[in-house]
Length: 116
Image (cartoon, rainbow, N blue to C red; front, top):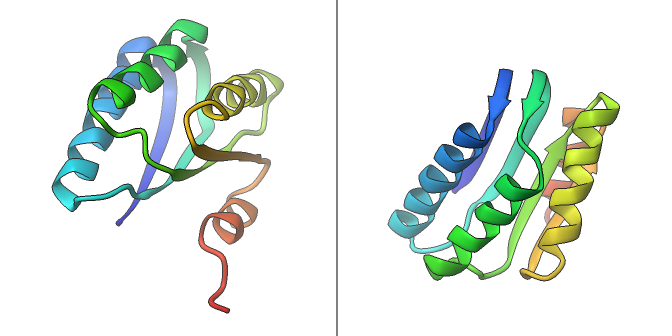
């Protein structure tokens, strides 16, 4: 199962928490992890930082969802890219593969590689 999340307008810590809960529920129902495309390009303001990202990983760990996952973040502004880098750095300790891209087609190519 693949999941696409688009943050628009003003994205808050509560939005990140809600997305985390919904992804955990989807993964639990599917019996595994899904690939994720998280698009920050339509977010005009990001009102969350380290604490929200740390809480995301703490919730996944608490819910037993620490297995490997692939997450592609799409970011165009420097602030969006910075949040993505923070997410990427924190994921390195959580067996999650995260990459940040400037456009959606590149993110999708990485997220779903062609069959071999």
